[in-house]
Length: 126
Image (tube, rainbow, N blue to C red; front, side):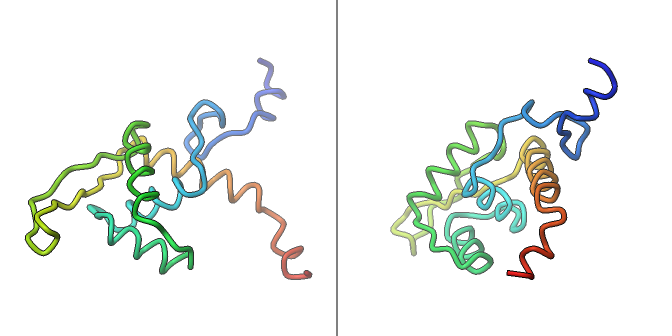
């Protein structure tokens, strides 16, 4: 590929090309970012964080399906804690964002910042 064509290919913030990694859906992005923000988070704390920061209502079922999907993609790891009597004996499932998860979040953040570049004034004018 010649240098001009190479410059036209979209790049992520880590030197790779967009499209070489899997993109995240909007809710996956929110869940992964919340897990990274909270570090060693569990379901209820993730729900609270997403609801508090976005104003979006989060259903526990949707969260756990998304956590399992993110784990399958290699973006986070889930571990089971000790059973908690106050939870009917059910253990909490804790999250740990992987290096690939951090790289993916960085790529998405860069892509969003690039697509929004220059639109702030148009938003203010409306």
